[in-house]
Length: 242
Image (cartoon, rainbow, N blue to C red; front, top):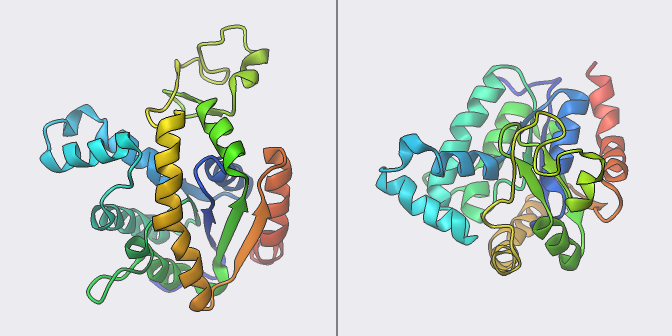
């Protein structure tokens, strides 16, 4: 497939709780991208009843639930298959925090990484990379107070988000039960933040060395303000493609 002239790929970086998933979802809805949430995809896979007895899945489930990043080769193979399908459909894609390790991003001498695939399918000029900056304190507060709808996946930033809900245990959108993710507690957040510092942050340095532009975004304001700042960075190219 030739690189698409009118579709874009977007990658959001930032430590856990910086708002990557929220911004990816907002951008996907605004300009018609597919949000490939690697973390949520893995969560459904490792906790799915069909894979319970698979030894590989069992290993990945233990890693996932502990807050440690999953095996890079396993994640890369899975994500590349999905990206190829999305690109073949003619759709744009947005990632919230993926690729998460140097191997997933760049591969090795035998295997190409996700960045190379995105560049091939969409073209470098249509690949937007953002780094969302928040304090670690804000990140911990956001994630430990976060609730997720177990049915539609709607994310509520905190218990305060439920003030308008009659039933504070169910989703205000679809009515599904609200749950807290297994890794959204203070102790596991410490592990996740350390994993980000050691294994994900080095990707930004390598991207810069390879000549990729990384746009820094302040993630502290309300999500709709952050979304507006992100869209302003993308809008000129996106508007020209319509």
